[in-house]
Amino acid sequence: MTLLRVEGLETAYGDSQVLFGISLEVHKGEVVALLGRNGAGKTTTLSSIMGLVPSRQGEVFFKGQAIAKLEPFQICRAGLGYVAEDCRLFTSLTVAENLETARMDARDGGAPWGLPEVLDLFPDIRNFLDRKAGALSGGQQRMVAIARTLMGNPDLILLDEPSEGLAPLVIEAMLQRLKQLKSAGQTVLISEQNLRFANELADRVYIIEKGQIPYQGTPAELNNLPEVRQQYLMV
Ligand SMILES: Nc1ncnc2c1ncn2[C@@H]1O[C@H](COP(=O)(O)OP(=O)(O)OP(=O)(O)O)[C@@H](O)[C@H]1O
Ligand SMILES: [Mg+2]
Image 1 (spheres, rainbow, N blue to C red):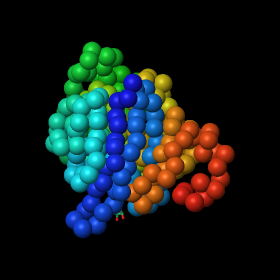
Image 2: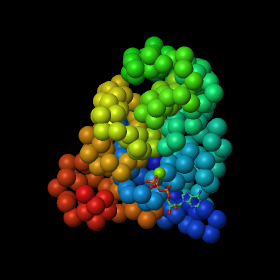
Image 3: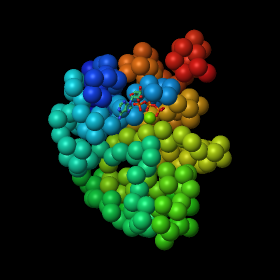
Image 4: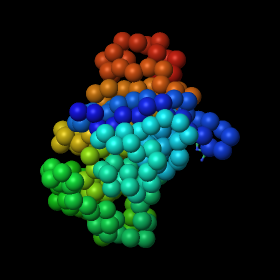
């Protein structure tokens, strides 16, 4: 079942066009990676899907509904969750309060994420539930941001560069948590520069470069194409 279908999305910041016809699909239960270098348009793609940056062309269908003209809060209510690169936690609230603010019941009665389930996935969070979110390390904030989004029981999570800026050990911890999230059946569209991170998680990958999608395939297919990796990802 197709949860998200993006068709020919074009987005500009003022006169400067950044996306030139992005098309992609995410099916229920999949983890799909949007892979690209710095400035390729990953964040712009996710924030356009979320309605945070208006698109000038193209359409986004979420569960069959056209959402490109909706407000971000409506898109969120429709069941699309978003974890921004910079987390955007309420820094003066505690971690527990941050999680509580995002609580929403599942729309279709599917297995809902509540506090116990979220803390089972991210057990470390138990150790700092009462601390102010602003006092956490970057890796801790990233985990709390994902946990908070799960509390809204989204059908699909857009996860912007979860490995970015984290130390190698923290990246490994994040990877294990996201693998568990995938095993729990959560559908995720993740943006990444880290090819190994994306390959270990994703069922399918799209490469984004200069606001276009020059390649799509499975991680295994991409592994057999060193020239594609070299051209678009420099690895
Ligand atoms: N608010 C903005 N105003 C103007 N230009 C922007 C804005 N945000 C991003 N851009 C430009 O749009 C292009 C794509 O940026 P975007 O942040 O989507 O890339 P990215 O793939 O997420 O990069 P990164 O890996 O650095 O996060 C870049 O050229 C960037 O300079
Ligand atoms: Mg980005």
